[in-house]
Length: 296
Image (tube, rainbow, N blue to C red; front, side, top):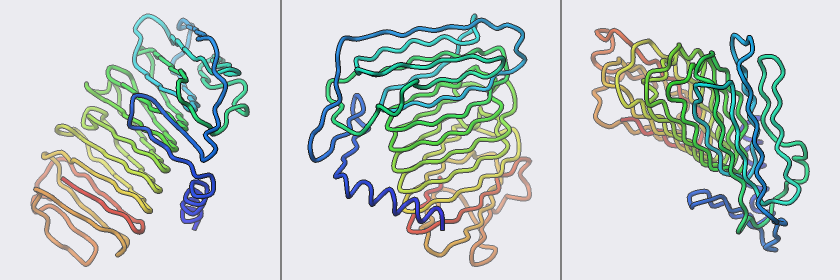
C-alpha cells in the first residue's frame, strides 16, 4: 500500500506542476510551466580533502541534488572532493567525524524546482581504496556516475529520485559486498560489472522507473535477488555459470526470458534445467504490478 501511495504521489506531483525532467542530455534540466529560473552567478570552486587518521573503515553519507556527480577512488587520501557551481546560494557541506563522512548541502532548503538552463553544479568525489566502505546515497534530480572499481565496498544503499545513475565494478571488489539496496523512483539506474561486486544479497525497489543489472561475467558466490517493481521495468543480464531460480509473486507482471533454458516448476516458479548441477546459484523473487521484467 505504501508503494502504491508513493507512485500516486509521484504521478500527481508531476501532473500538477507540469514538470518535465530530461536526464539523458549533457546535464540535468528541470522545467515547469512558468519557466522559472534559479539565479546563477560567478563560477565558484569548493575543495576539501582528508587524510587517513586511524580509521578502520569509512561510512559515506552522500546527499546530492540537481547536479552532475562523479565518484571514484583515491589511493593517497581518505577523501578528496572538488565542486564547481554557479548557482547562487549553494554551499556544499563536507564533514568528517571519526569514521563517518557526510557530503551534501548546508542550505538545501533553498533548492527548488525551476529552469536549470546554463547552470553548473559538478561534484567530483574520490574516496579511499584502503578501507572497507559503506555507502548511503541519496540522488535527487542528478546525473551520477559511481565508479566503484578498486574500492573495498562492504555495503551500498542508494535512493535515486528523478535521476540517471550509473554504477560500475570494472574489477573484482576487494572484499565481499554484503548488501546492495537499490531504490529507483521516476528515474533510471544501471549497474555494470555486478559479477565483480562479490555481492551476496541485492534488493531492488522500482517505482515509476527503470533499473538495469548487468553481471558481465561469472559469479563466485551464491546470490539472493529480491525485486519489487510498480509501474516500471527491470532488466537483468545474468551470468552463464549460475543456476537460476525465479519466483514471481504477481500475475500483473510481464516476464520475458531470453536465451536461457528454464523449466516450469509451478504456475509462478521457474528454474534453469541445470540449476541443481551448478556450483553457484541465483535465487530471484519478483513482485509488483503493471511492470515488466526482462531476463537475459
